Length: 214
Image (cartoon, rainbow, N blue to C red; front, side, top):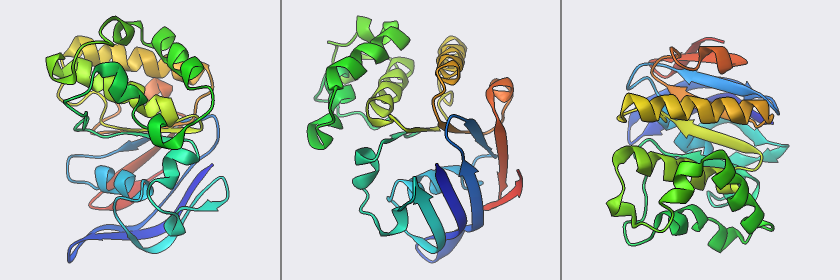
C-alpha cells in the first residue's frame, strides 16, 4: 500500500532523512520507533507532502505521492494525526473531525462519523464542546478521530500517546487494538514500542534519520 524507497529530506540546509525506505502493506499495523529527533515526524510530514523529498520514490496504491499535491493525500484515503493535534480553536470537536470532509466531500461521511463514535464513544460525549474547552488528552482523541475521518485506507499517527495522562495513553492503545482487529492499515510513530509492541506486524527503528532495523 505505502511504499517509500530511499528518500532524503532536508529542512533548510540541514539533512534530516537519509535514504529512508519502508513499506506498510495493506491491513497491517507498523511501527516507526525512534527517540525524539530521530526523524519520525519529518518522515510523516514528507509522506503527507508538507516537506519535499529530494530523492527516492514514494507511492501509495500505485500513485506517485512525490508528484501529487499535499491535499491529494486526503482524497486517496490517507489520514494523519500530528503530534501537536492542530485543532481549529474556533470550531467544536465534531466540526474539527468533519473539517477534512468539507473539502474532500467524501461519500458516506455520516456513516463514517457514526463508526468513529462507536469506536471512540468518549468523543461523541463531548462532540459539541469547543476545541479550547477540551483537555490535552481529549484534544488528542479529536485529532485521532479527524485522521480516521479521511484515513479510510491508511492511518498515520505521530506519537499518539505523547504528552497525555497514562489513562488516555492506555485508551489510545485500546483503540488501536480495535483498529487492528478490523484490519485497518496503520503506521504509528512512537519513541518506544513498550505499549504497542504486541500490536505491530512490522517495526522500523529510525536513528539519526536512517532506518537501522526493520
